[in-house]
Image (cartoon, rainbow, N blue to C red; front, side):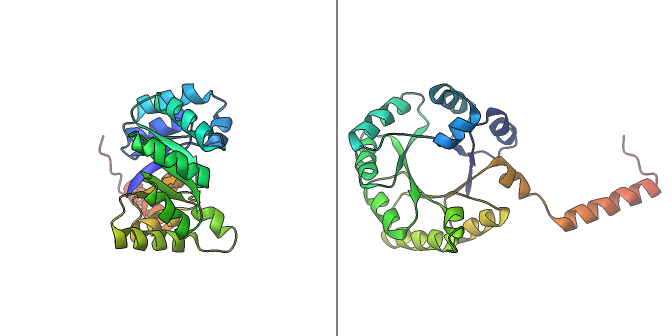
Length: 217
């Protein structure tokens, strides 16, 4: 499973990228606002930093405006994936931009039917939101499984990009289900390394090394 980093913070992306943990980046208007940067400027910097797809989201609501914004965003770099919402207008924009050879990430997916429509429209990525479904006492991971089954049934090439990841457990569960990509905040990706037994074991090793006066350098 590929890891995308869900942030517009350059330092956080660079740290994970240096460790080989970045296969792509996803951004949205909220993350751009949080960064305090101009969308075109910060997106260009991210594209220069990473080799994989960088999702940049349109802000228009009408198809023709989304298409125009998508074309503008795609001019930033070859690895831009234009991000459009899963609305009827968004699907229209997806079809046009995909036919023009651009990568398209259809976002805000909350049902298998929506994911099926996105695949039919030629989406490169579909972004089902796990955490926001969990917030409504629905199992977001069930949606990932449903989409995986449908796509496999018919050979759709759209990549399942699990989004709204809240926990390290979400990451491992998505990997088991077969999501192609999971996008998560830097803190969640780092949390995947944590385990209480690792901490306890390391603490004991440190104590024993001190007691045995073990020195390597």
